[in-house]
Image (tube, rainbow over all chains, first blue to last red; front, top):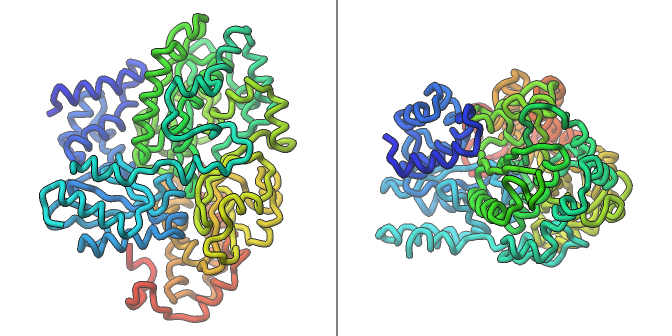
Length: 164
Length: 455
């Protein structure tokens, strides 16, 4: 169920569009749900559909079309490393492989402690900052050398009270 | 440390990409330092002076459009269409709602200029949009921002609040009878939404699948209403043009290529970043601003306008100037101004492999030639790269590209086909060499597997 606080965030998005075009807020509502719950569950899609007056399948179409929506639970920190050509020329794939070694998981996998999910991503639009990665859809980390990647992972582990 | 504190250590500051002082006569990036993005800072840089000039001097819609036409400003998103002409297509007397849309869905590989504009100078885009709305009699606008730059989206929302509080946005702007409401919208990871009609679909809360054109957005846009869509950098150029005049803008560039352009330079240069220079600046000068090719190596090739633009070999590129006409004459396109530089050590088959994967991944699936063809291209390039190529594969790649190009609703199909044809045209020997030497070990040292068996 959508609580009052989430609903007020939804309301703020819906207010941007004409009254008969509430559906325009679906991407924002899905992103809000993902931020709060970690992923978009079928139940959440149903709640958003009810709130916006859409068919649940129309919401599901949006969830499945856009790359950044998580259709199933992911680790507490989702790391998306750009490996597109401009980044490939500046160690994007190297950064991904470094994280694979550091975390002990392959691309697309989640660490057994549930802390990290590692993914490859397409262009993040920060090509001159390569290597770049996006943490939990909202925070871009730039110029991620191996040392910085280690600091990032160790720092996040420490913030969760886990050994480095 | 909290997780937020940990992450804050790795945030871009803009020093490397935007405030490096290596622009030439910048207009959009002038005097930025990363902290001066707020309204009062923008006003101190002559911000909103163009809007005030229009309102206070009573410039007509026709006068504003004529000035933009005179400037020869061309769309900065990729197509290079004349902005003033596009504005004149808007049916200004249409009795219903009309919409203005800013395309900030910057996802063309290599392009990162709009992010720095929106992050370090958001009000310049807001002012440009207000002026455009005034010129076309539009009262509602949306800025569609790339979902991956969420921090920039948040900042743009903050800038909108400042503009509303100051009376630049909302009802009766600066006491006039002109009203304009502007809102921010975010994508969530779909390259195709940079295509304007896919963007419209997305803005309506649907899958981002492109629409047939015609009808064009000027007659059937957001919610089926007349709409004008311009790129972020295009809007950002407008305030300067209004303040200084169309002729002055044209004079900073070259004929038919008015003004400055921001080039996002990535890849094998010493100093990747955004460089704002007058259109018509020699490529060799741009390369010099970037500190030259990395490690003192030789230049091999350049993709001059984002990953969809055909690659050009070094010797052609070094004779080009950076403007729409020169790059088109050389057989490529200026596109979004994303300059991807590759040095002599680069494997062109491997580079094409990554691009082909990208287009396959991002094809929306609507048109069969693109949906099926992009996967086919990737599988064939993959088998060539991994030592399973056949002598007939080069012609096969060209044939598949031919059967995609021009046969799809939108330009993604063309964008997937063009790099393939250009890579083969200029670097055919690299493809032939890989085909002639089968069973190459793959880069991870494992046995190569047949195409299609992975990913």
